[in-house]
Image (cartoon, rainbow, N blue to C red; front, side):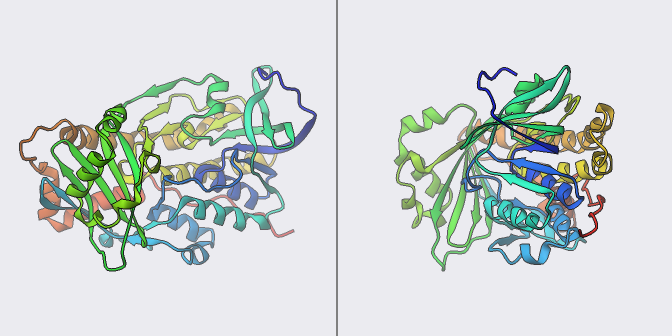
Amino acid sequence: MTSDQQSNRTMKVRCCIVGGGPAGMMLGYLLGRAGIEVVVLEKHADFFRDFRGDTVHPSTLQVMDELGLIDGFLKLPHQRLQKMDGLFGGTPVRIADLSRLHTKYPFIAFMPQWDFLNFLREAGRRFTSLKVMMSTEAVDLIRRGETVAGVRARTPEGIIDIEADLTIACDGRHSTVRERAGLAVEEIGAPMDVLWFRAGRRPDETENVFARVEPGKMMITFDRGDYWQCAYVIAKGQFDAVKARGLTALLDDVVRMAPILKSGIADVKSFDDIKLLTVAINRLTRWTRPGLLLIGDAAHAMSPVGGVGVNLAVQDAVATANLLADELQHGCPSENELDAVRRRREFPVKMTQRMQVVVQNNIISGALLGSDRPLKVPLIVRLITALPWLQGIPARLLALGVRPEHVQSKAAPPS
């Protein structure tokens, strides 16, 4: 261990999950449901952090249904999106129509991620084998030779060593566990970053436009009930240049692109109200060490294109439980058994990232690097708009993904 702090406390579990995001909380729920002694470490005191992925796609809704959680889940406040319309250089286009899908939940639910995570935590309280430790940050790995044997974590009460047969890293694209394990990241790259902010919405303001693309500019707006969630896309590394132009210039550009925001844009009072999302697309070639597995953003950071990051993370968690729950009943699976997760999930990850790169290279880069000449709507977008039956294809890829996972891990008998 590299940390020079000494631990006075220890605990022992079958599985330690680092990170209480969608992958970590879903996997913790599934393993707790299977009767496996599991602890989830979340470094923050709560899940309340703004500007996280808030899109819950049909694939995740189906998982919640398979777990018997869907009725309570859909009682939480949320908005639903079926048709994704846009303006491309002023030309109306339809990107996808989820109502054409033959699926039980043909819509995207917009829900604050903290509500999703809190729901899973509350639902998991009935499993005595599941423990969620908030304000607990993994700072190092515990090793026995070449095998990862748990994590050293910082808590409000001090350092604790959590010994585990299996450690699973779900601690995001800036994963501490990944860095401590020395796993190399293959960077694929993205041409843009995103500025996230909110603008107020009056009850009488309605608009179905989802995406707006103009020469040199692009933005996304989501109707979130009492406010508009906005994503203003900028060229990679240009945030300082945007700030140099001043807040007024930025907000003037926003209102010109989306006049519906005119009355509510005053909610953005300074650059403190704007969150920079540094976009990255990357993935690991190796997701394991002996005693260690990485999933979700820790294994593969996704672009915000399509808003699929949360759902890929949930799919990883479901696949992990399907493949490993039985083996975990008896101890740590072998590294080859752990690697079955990568073998199962690598193809959908690569295909999804490839599609994101195609969108980046053919639409986003062209918009951000465009001149003052009118934008031409890409042929594929023109075809999808002109032939409504084609709208089910991007809808299916967006809603269900390349390889949707279904819950196969068994629930332990009630004690």
